Length: 265
Length: 265
DNA sequence: GAGTGGTCTAGACCACTAC
DNA sequence: TAGTGGTCTAGACCACTCA
Image 1 (cartoon, chains in turn red, orange, green, purple):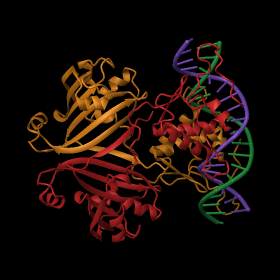
Image 2 (cartoon, chains in turn green, orange, brown, cyan):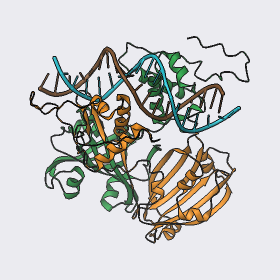
Image 3 (cartoon, rainbow over the protein chains, first blue to last red):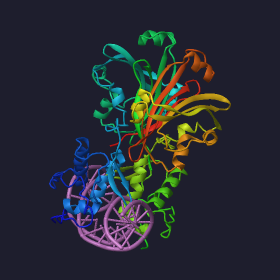
Image 4 (tube, rainbow over the protein chains, first blue to last red):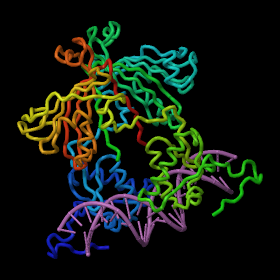
């Protein structure tokens, strides 16, 4: 399928060589990685490395599929996954182009893991409490269990650069996993859950603010009345079980939630 | 394609009638609405109305497609869209089931429109300023334009139940749309942009908190030093142009951000 | 009118799960 | 071993955009 040599001045700009023409994609059919996924990854890295610049057209799907030796649905699946990520935009009658945005690295909306791993610079965790308690009303409601049922209470103080950043209070259904205090101090809760075979699926969050009580101020090294960010969250696994309910407070002077939204069409 | 009469005691539980068997789906091939979308909508409403209860299996895709007179890819497309919404879960070798979750109504993560339309009960908007000004440094950076370039400045006070809730300060590229003050007071900014043919695509947000200054306190009816929720946002259309940069402050005593996250796998 | 993505079909083989 | 979803193919027709 050698493409017709296009640069022979018919009409004005002939086939309008897409930015993709110069790129080489290596597809390994013997790999267990799906073909559409291999293609999507290589397209994504081409966009990240600037080989595909914002606004560049990808060239039509039919050509692309014949050039790659794939069927059109497979190519579409690859492209669709990048559209879902917000890297590409499709326009009927026009083509598919790289999104022309300043936001190149969308801060993974699924910050479920990330925002518990603190913003990069060497976070530390101090486990304040790790014990079993009967569930209070709000906890029972959050986890969807009976009031008074036994739950694991986990209180942690998270710091970065030696300064307290947040106080995390979490409740977990018992017997879900064993929460080793040592491991909790060296990693995040979600990481632990993941290694225990729990597949996180969704979470419901409420983010608010309020003034610090004297106790909270002392704990976090703020002044009484300082503004705090608050978050309540219930996380569910893929069977719909509530696997965690938490109430977190953050020093507003040292932390903010930062994320990207994609508008679903 | 009459299904084989299944209830004649072979083996133990024969075909394990899926919860779907009793449901009727009406597909209109002459409708401009895609078939996969019609199916997805009817499945979604069946889930919402409880006809499909959490944990129910959907029955395999092949049977479903023959029963509906659709191809399997089309049925898969419908199911996939609900999986993406977090309503269904697929397990290879097992089947597709309704997610067993307390969270039935995921609060549309794309709250880009919604959180500017206030939480339900008759919000009102008072336009404080609506004029053209040169862009300051942070505004220019947020919109990706030159410092000092002319932008539209929009300041609004939003109330609910006659009480102030938020103060919204937005900057827009000039000539993007004409911001009629009357219409701004009767609807949201995004609604206006949408009617002007602007397709919102993504937004980058930062949510934080701080204490109210005396001016802010007076404006919002809070006491000086009260906790405020702050949000900075840049919104982009589908070509990647920044179409809005805004700085909002919310009374923490009357407002909180509330949303659901889906973990992408 | 030419070109694009949007939708749809009717098959196929494979990997994984459960029994 | 049977049944499931995961992947893939090679076509087809339509709706929309743009010149």
